[in-house]
Amino acid sequence: MSMRTESCDYLVIGSGIAGLMSALNLAPHGRVLLLTKKRLADCSTNRAQGGIACVIDPEDSFQQHMADTIDVGAGLCNEQVVRKIVSEGPARLKDLIDLGVSFNLRSDGQPGFDLGREGGHSQRRVLHAGDITGQEIEAVLVSQTMKHPNITMMENAMVIDLITTRWLHRPEANQCVGAYVLDEKGGEIFAVRAPTTVMATGGCGKVYLYTCNPDIATGDGIALAWRAGATITNMEFIQFHPTCLYHPLAKRFLISEAVRGEGAELVDDKGRPFMLKYDPRGSLAPRDIVARAIDAEMKRSGAAYCCLDIRHQPKAFLQSRFPNIYEACLSFGIDMATDLIPIVPSAHYMCGGIQAAVDGVTSLPGLYAVGETACNGLHGANRLASNSLLEALVCAHETAGRIVREAHQLPDALRIPDWHYGKAVASDEAVMVAHNWMELRTCMWDYVGIVRTNKRLDRARNRIRNLRREIREYYFDYLVTVDTLELRNLALVCELITRCAMLRKESRGLHYTLDYPERLPKAKDTNLPGRRL
Image (cartoon, rainbow, N blue to C red; front, side):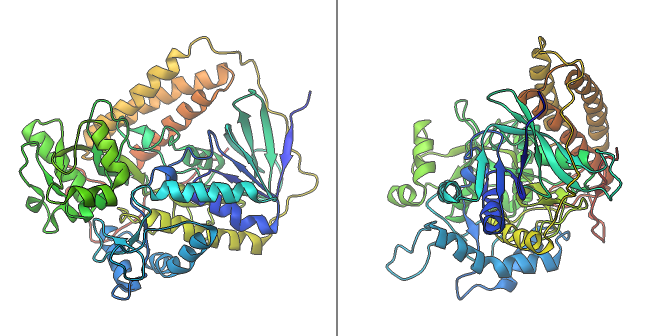
């Protein structure tokens, strides 16, 4: 029996804000197939607590938002990109509100939105829906997407590899023409034939032992794009969120930066403030500085954690401003109004990714990248808090516009061959997947974490390459599963992060190395051209 092939005008991979907004913007112009490897709501957007940074207050300005973004980005931001995304923010925010997303209004009876402030921001400009902003956005966008007649959504559909004309040995210049996909429920492998593919697969936090990312964040989009030939850039810039709740029963629970925006102070495990030793902005310094400071304090004292202190705020305020965080902490026996909140840094956001423009264009024709999986120059060497949802909104809109204008077509004669199973059989050694998964993540945490050295990076590269050889053999010997595919992608992304870190002979933003503690006068990207078949 021949393999099933689905055809569409636009293939969108990922169901966070970047993927859903891309699908909604493209749907009026053709048939959209949206794939997600788990459920639609299994994404980082659904976990976003803080909100969307956007200039709407008369006392704020685009110039101030740009200056804050560029300052935090440590000299690596693309100023034109920053200007475009910041200035388009209000219009794209209106799109979201028109779709039905509700943000908190001022509580003092005055008109306007309640604006929060987070680390690195000089003004209050973060719109939020309580402390579950991402959950509110995701629910509305999923509802709108499900209602659109031109959008077909498939859950539990894991992309194995992108398909390119070079892979098919066609004469035309290399371009992306679709993907091979594993239907997890039925175990079937099918193909998608599409002239345009939008990659919106989010980040890669699961490459680290400790992360606040969801389990799906295994860097799939980066691995898929690199194997297809797309350029990957600046993967060394992994943002560690400074304040993940430290508790044996708390899995990946984030204490939003907005808590510090409302006056919480970082203290050691004895309650002593320490941030002014590291930065004059204190607890509202950018995330890279705060994460390194916490890491240094823990190493200095031998403590397992540091703390947040917001006990000066009334209980009623904390329950109103942070209802979800307050209740979650209380469920672990921590009352924000009377107790210190124990925290540790954890892998949070990937500032590098698939090299792309604001309109999603990558080095591989037919492939576009949007959201966290893309690197377009907005974040530079460190992301300003709450700029990520803004970026996804603006770039999804710009990408859809570019795609519609270009109107890609595939040759009628182009056919995608059946998936070749070879001699692969069902696995009887799944323990290898679990073991290598843990070894990779431990290696990355120990050797390619918040503070790096040449020796650590060299050890990591050697370990990861050995593991990739084992994983490659396993991949070809056994029938593919979601676990196998994630491990394969995870291992590749680990190597790409390590290789980029080895290329950067300086400390800049999120990349800090003891061997090169100074910052070079001129910022440069670290580009890794994709694999050539």
